Image (tube, rainbow, N blue to C red; front, side):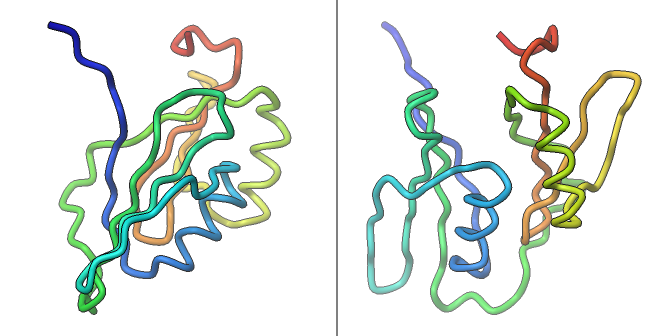
Length: 126
């Protein structure tokens, strides 16, 4: 038996705002969507760099922000031009934590989810 990693899911409060953020901050674009009377699922891809997708779920009737608890989980993204990415994220005002000793930083999406940014030649990027 073999398993294949397909996608991660994040619930978002404002789908349009999240789509703009993920495209601008990480270059992720919509590859497909599923619409239902009560929710919308939008799958984002990285243009073929990997087959992994990020699924954004928008519950149409939801009004209140999500409680992320201690928010101890995150998604990680490798980038080929770390300095350019850092400049972009500084301009966007979305850097929420930097660990210069490790050579990484985190950005926060519109709902408060943390996304790790790792340079291409970092030892944790394969």
